[in-house]
Amino acid sequence: MSDPAHFNLPARALHWTMAAMVLAMLFIGVAMVTSVAHYHALVALHRPLGIGILVLAVLRLINRWRSPPPDLPPDLPGWQRKAAHASHILLYGLMLTLPLVGWAMLSAAGYPIGLAGSVVLPPILPRDPGLYAWLRPLHTVLAYTLFGIILAHLGAALMHGLIRRDGVLGSMALRLTASQSR
Amino acid sequence: MSLLNDLTGAGPGLGPRAVLLRLGAIGALVAGTAGTFAYAGGWLSPGDLTQARIVDRFEQVNGPHPGFRRNHAKGLCLAGRFESSGGGVRLSEAALFAAGQVTPVTGRIALAGGQPYAADAAATVRSLALRFHLPDGEEWRTGNNDIPVFPVRTPEAFYAQLLAAKPDPATAKPDPEALKAFFAAHPESAKAAALIKARTITSGFADDTFRSLNAFRFVAADGTETLVRWAFVPEQAATAESPAQAARTDKNFLFEDFAAAIRRGPVRWHLVVTLGSPGDASADATLPWPSERASVDVGRVVVTATEAEANGNCRDVNFDPLVLPDGIVGSDDPLLSARSAAYSQSFTRRVGEPKAPSAVHDTPVSGAGL
Image (tube, rainbow over all chains, first blue to last red):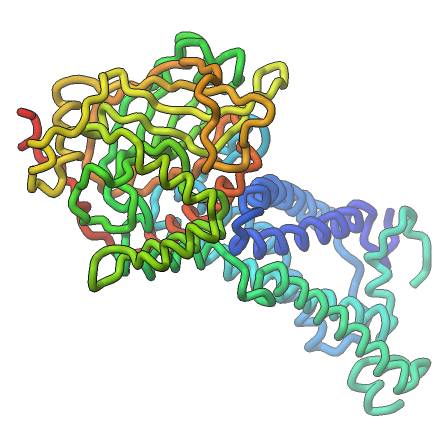
């Protein structure tokens, strides 16, 4: 697929799958840390979902290198162009960093990181409660940052789709063929 | 083109009214997403019980003790092994129950309550927390108490009881009126308190029986689930506290007696799993199960060493009762998720705080001669 006006199919499939996963993850995370009755059930979802996001984010980055995204519209103001680039770097960075910080903090806390059944991830840091005490709030701050950027991303995407109507939103639309013109 | 179109980048095809409507819709969607997030995070329901409020209440009742567990604050680390009898294989596929399997164990004995320097007293509830180190990174963590049933049925009742049982600074005893009101509102707790009060108090940790209190489910290799509760039953015959022991002024006598016993030789508990029948309470830890329920001795815990709390040992472990190996799952008891949540909150707070030495040191002195 070499249509320059659209993300390729893997990019679009990954985008929408991960959109659902990341949003679910953020909502699970924020509910989990206050919940009493559902804490355990939410944690049990949070861990495998986080690892799933990490794996997909790596695949997505590889796909992006192999198949660069379409150019932004030429008439887009410079500050919006810069904001778009910066926010995408942050989005990718956080999608990769948040699961890694989560994995690292559980390692430092000495928790077994069970995914499902008897599958336990190996620790990626030595057990060090002091390190956990530092990583745990970092995980929260990064998660709120990601949520904020996702809100901005959502608002900007809708501005492109509903106000500017410049084809940017359509370039990520989830259709199986990418033959529509902008 | 209007200023509005210029500002938003809208093309000439969109009138100002349409632009405003669409901007409003976008704003509403973004705000709605943020609002739902705030709802999920509990910001819109400040009255709900949260893990932070449970731990706050411990701090309120016990005063600040930075670096220590908010409950079961006074403790001593232990190490040893679990020797499986093979009797648990038909109940649970957990690797530690395989016949002849020996699993390293670390753990902690402790006294209930949030006072890390409280003097040992025979009537204080004692606990045995264990961490079984299974192959391939799996763990089983379990916290057990030496009472027959748990005093409350729900996390909300636990939260209310903490405050009702708060010692009055003037009398050092709970306000009788507050306790009366609590028991009136929670008749199941009144019954449980009577059972707890009637328990036999043994001479120390080594001859004490520690119970899971909450129900769990053992899952066998063929998928069969069995509702269970378990107890760590001492190999040593239980003896009552002697008058000489009761008269001791040593503030750590229970812990020092245990450390002395370990220096003389291993202390053993059998892990006895009680099998629930249909109709037995799975979600009410205040209710005892009928005494005629079948039980299986699945092996024994052999404790061979003790160690004062210090960096990196049992002090810095969260004995979350829902850290379970494949083959054991939690029941629908609401206290389990609540314990998991509150322990996590307590752990996160204390590991970030400055540390003071624990009350129980490794002092090879008194106690051995008793």
